[in-house]
Amino acid sequence: MKLDLLSIAVLMSLSFSPVSASFFPSITSIPRSLPKATAGAWDVFHNFTGCHSGQKVNGLSKLKKYFGRFGYIPDVGANCTDDFDNALEAALRTYQKNFNLSVTGQLDDQTLQQIMRPRCGNADIVNGTTSMNSGKMSSARLHTTAHYSFFPGTPRWPDGERDLTYAFFDNLTDDVKSVFSRAFNRWAAVTPLTFTLVDSLVSADIRIGFFEGDHGDGQPFDGALGTLAHAFAPPAGRFHLDAAENWLVTDNGSTLAQSSAFDLESVAVHEIGHLLGLGHSSVKGSIMYPTISSGVRKVELANDDIRGIQELYGRKINSNGTTTASAGETDASENSAAHYGGGSRWFLGVLLAVGFGLLDL
Image (cartoon, rainbow, N blue to C red; front, side):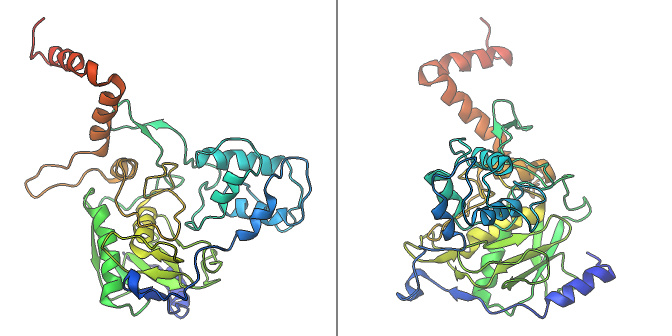
């Protein structure tokens, strides 16, 4: 990808600010002294349990700014008040719908627990146009409901750019680099895209780095257990992770029980989805779900992720010229079987056979 002068200037300004992150090669290497994930950047919000419309509570303006950051309240501004007003109630209702919570418009315990979880720094709603929980019908097949989303305008990498390159700001070890290689390969397995590591930041399509606090892109990190990372829509190619977090480098499928370390590959797979054009999804099991707790490893693409990315780029073309099956096809057949039940599957099979002319009745 060719960079213009402004992009190069921004790139150079960022290249001086990466800091060393803490990486742990395995669960057993995590020190016992490492604090458990009990308090995070938004832990203070638990004080608002039970708040509802019409109240005025000290500090509620910080929660409004949280919702503003993730797209639920547009134009929050610096003068927002501590009043539980209509804007906050509307934001809460949308948030609760997106995260499959009871839509009460109140700060119940379940909602606050979700709000306080570490998460991706990308907004759930961009310019008031995207929707995590649209419940749209998948274009792959009928009878499948999709919840994936795209950035406004549905940006993607151009058709002529299917072999993408990536580079790192940081001097990372081979073990850490291999985590990102595995994460990229998960998306390459279901699309025509390929990803190759290169040395040059200037020529790379995708540029990855670990930063702390305000690092010049308008999306400052907020310390441990807050926003973990963020990535920009294509073709910007910017992927930043919070160096204040503790990162685990592993591929053994284990969890990080009771530690405050985060599985690096899990976060990387999610952010690469953004780099390719996907927004957030309300499907809790999907990679593009916005939150992930410490102690969780989630690296396998869900059907919702695959349907979304294949809508942007199509299926992977195999060496023999065939294409991989889409998630929508598999999901549709599973949904049909579940809907009709075991006792009716034989009858459904007969109807399908008649429809395709394989059986006369």
